[in-house]
Image 1 (cartoon, rainbow, N blue to C red):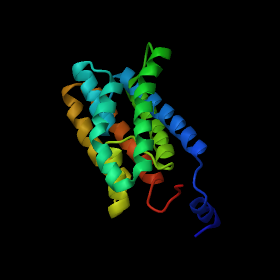
Image 2: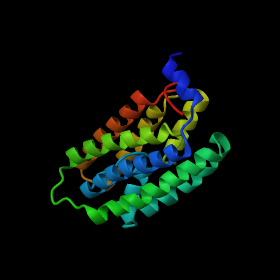
Image 3: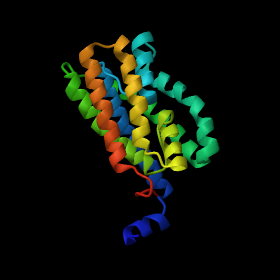
Image 4: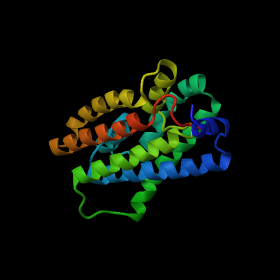
Length: 205
């Protein structure tokens, strides 16, 4: 084991570092989510389900995202500890608020769906990594994926990719074919970023 790895294991993140990471990670993820919303595209996982509800019913994405995550906290509490649940609850709440808040400060008159989806997926992937490395997630499928990785060694990115593709395909009934293809491309990019950078035994403090 390298000296760097040994130091990261011995010195956990401080409370201030965790708080700043939650704010930074959720700001980045919510920015990506807002890009997707303005482009009319979708993504996978719980966020994708929230987008489908938003497009089908008009319920705000932030509200749908927050409510959909509630049932998963019990699994997180039983399997991953109180600290993880508290961080995840805060992260979900912040993304729900920030996503709606971004819309008050930016509006794009022209936004190419493919460009927006790819860019959103990249920045969301980076935001997920920040949260994961501070032992937090964005609930829902993230909790399930992290649990399966910790318990059975199944990579979180692969679990999320499988679920995400299913969610995105469901969106065929609500978005046109071009947006569907862009959304599938975005889901693959997002989960490749996570699969390549978040594996058991790699950096986490």
